[in-house]
Length: 305
Ligand SMILES: O=C(O)CCC(=O)C(=O)O
Image 1: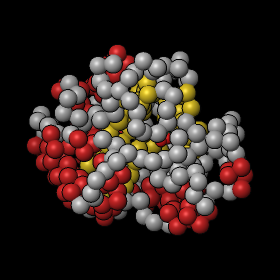
Image 2: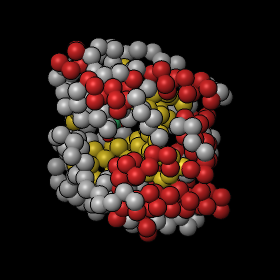
Image 3: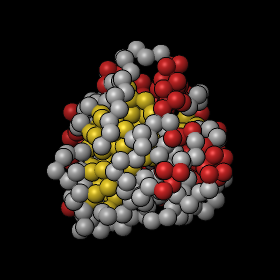
Image 4: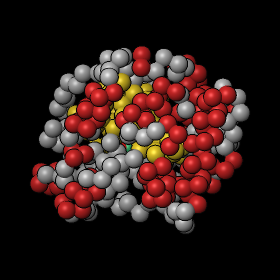
């Protein structure tokens, strides 16, 4: 598998460099030093707790094998590859607090605000999930999150030309080399070779394995051409989050709420967060609720499976 070397940004990477990397490559990797107040030990403990609950069937919001796209069932019998809804009010409180402290981490939100050029008071709570070692080897097909594989080149180009108004990231709690991307593919329609490739093509031209050390964060355009390849023998606990901007409007809120967040977002409990963080969390949650009110009835994705 071809692996390109991409330098990790330094701890003091200027905003313009982050934006340049994200715009050029479709992703940017930030070192753990960029987020000094993230408590990796607490996050690992929280991740271990919810993963145990999820594998045993005691947490119903899971990504089940061998299914790539939602909706997933709550039956963990065939194994899981993810734990959904880390900010859900029913997540055990100590773990929920650890997850919320990372999701609403000031340095992380500051980076999000810079990357999507959104004022802090317009940030919107979105998704926070955990991607875990699958119970059996598993892979995702090549995809863009918001554009179906059936899209024509014209449809791809039209969609990719619009601003995303949200940031998506993976924060690795253990070293993680599961995500594979085609750098630059977030800016253009698929090439003839990419269209002709099989859904699980193992050597896509230009592909790159995103290698994260524990504590590193990759922000990526969710419409970059990407896939996941998961080894059931390798520990994986990677926080998978997204934050939006009110400019994303009802369409984006709909996209978020159709992941099931709408069922519990009104009951979020941010008790225990430090005052400023708690206030930020409440504001971000309220913005999602408000945007959801105008987005209408929300069903699940109809991505092809
Ligand atoms: O495992 C990953 O990091 C990628 C997950 C992904 O592509 C998806 O959930 O659509």
